[in-house]
Length: 612
Image (tube, rainbow, N blue to C red; front, top):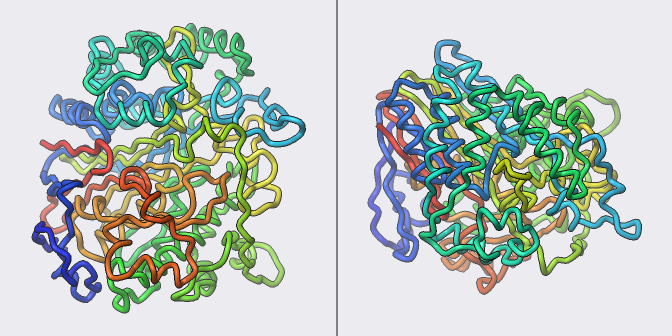
């Protein structure tokens, strides 16, 4: 399969709307205001992430003889240092891994676990759900598995020690890194009062209780010491030893419900990955409570559509893509919980029979009204008996959030990493703290940022289905995350690594990027940079039903008016912004004929590709 390399000249020609039958003529429209890049190319190692220092750390490890698994952990640890609002050792992480000699994809769940003392009643005020308690502060903090996941990957597949792969991160934690303009603006605009409310966080990241300007050097030597302790004493220091004791002391002092037993009980879970086919490719993802099944279902539905009838980014194309995305998202809200505590379908949403039943619910050229409801893969696949009638959408009802003025609608993201080495070993994984800086505090003097994973649970009722939620908080359970790493093989070798960030905009962003590469023949960089759309909000609990479309699509050929005529509640141009709205994506594609690797990283944030 050969890439068709296109001109990058600015154009507003009909080529913008070319069909799949004329993909060779595709010319990507690029605005000077949003400069784009060419795909990175290599025949050895490649790393994509959201910080150039992090991708450089991964490459450095491979140059020293490490493999993709060593490099992935080094990259992650560097992101803990240089992208601290997005990820950290007390966050969640989900991995797809391909050890080339074994020739088999495996999945690792290092998600977050609700402490046994945290129950839904804690999050109510006057008997009603109070989401503000789930968004930040000690009631939002749960037991994270990211560091346990990093260590598990090294122990099973790595060639280096934690001490070796943590060296680059420790250097920058102790000596500091300069803040990017993106982070400086995001922190200041997203939650300006957090440094005043959480002085322990402010003492490291916000001098004088003020978020710092771009270029300011930020250090976290306490996290460096935590990593030195783990390197010397092992992971037990973090979950059972001195670090655990300090974190529990602080959490309880702040009014939280952690115990040493909660931390000691945490275990990563090795799992069989979700698997399906797309044309001649084997497609893999992490099963629930990760959300790989969401974009996988989208892609499986897309396989059954005749895209030669559509023009790329036309209103009709956006309509079909959006209706596919809505159905898969509804299933994620309905069936994406912890399989040990709730019904969690996994592969049942990817069967040909179920995909056909989902596609029958789409009326081309029309927007389904209101909130599209989950299907029933159990009935459709014959697991349970009874006649199946697809559910009708529910009317939209605005969800009022407590203290809404303090909590922006889109307050945070995540970060994704793709790595492949010269031997074909590969890793695609996503890790997060939840929203920016997670639960908005450091855990004592450990330098570890608390997650706010409680925010990703429902309490009892789903705002989307208005029924008892399959994602409801349960002590000891793992919450659903929007993290959705993926991997594709062709003839037993890595063909694509893909993933992204942006809460519930992640899955459609990944899906659209894959479609850009595989259906519209864009190179990986153009595939992730191309304009996108997003249906709904970035949070499951707001139950939003608006459609946001980036201006390159919305403002061309009357697309906006056509979508409104189809029945969409379109976000007006005055309220749509380019950065952040459509999710973020990163991709590595391997040419199966030459084994050359092509990388693309998100240009809406600090996406970067490093190679050697």
